Amino acid sequence: MPDSLRPILQIRNVRKAYGSRTILAGISLDIAAGERLALTGPSGSGKTTLLNLLGGVDRPDSGLIEFDGRDINSLNNSDLTALRRTSFGIIFQFFHLLPTLTAAENVELPLQLNQVPAAERVNRVNQLLDRVGVSHRANAFPGELSGGEMQRVSIARAIAHKPRLLLADEPTGNLDSKNGASVLELLREVSEETRTALVLVTHSPAAAAICHREIRLLDGLIFREINPFSRPS
Image 1 (cartoon, rainbow, N blue to C red):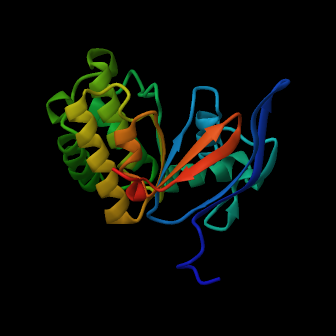
Image 2: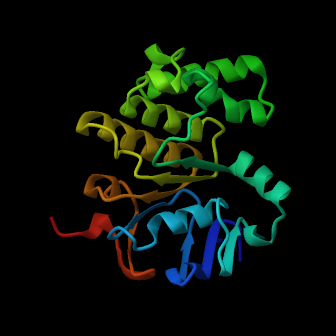
């Protein structure tokens, strides 16, 4: 298969349970470079668990997850960390900002880990903080930021190193409608500018509407696939 047609992410019959509770009961789907995919469904349907598996934060009990032809489940911890550092960006629902670093330093961290030159790091951080509307809070620590400000800083950090796969868990959940719309537009622009694949967990119809496809999960299975752009108005 030509590289241009090969999915950047392939998921085959992925299963995950915690104790006796089955969370994912066999999920299979493909995601192309530059594609935006919304994962929706009721609480407890497996959305965040699937997102964590795709990002290598957790490992499935069985099944295959391939990123760019590499089985991420077969990677050792060191190789998986290197892959996540260079190719993945994750927007966590609860931010996970480092409390001892300022907003600017949190955004700069993935660039430092990838050994980006200092001058380029400064320019990139300044551009991103301005783009998400928190440049005036660059020197503030997470404990001094509002929930919405922390969310925007976490988004800037996730895209700082221009990842090939961006995973977002309710990225607009702590934002008002104006800032939420701005963040969604930013995520759409990033995916189009860099052909970054975006997988978005959301309960928001507005967030799902920026995606090419919507996958609804129910009881750990794909219940329905929807193309938002072909929905009747």
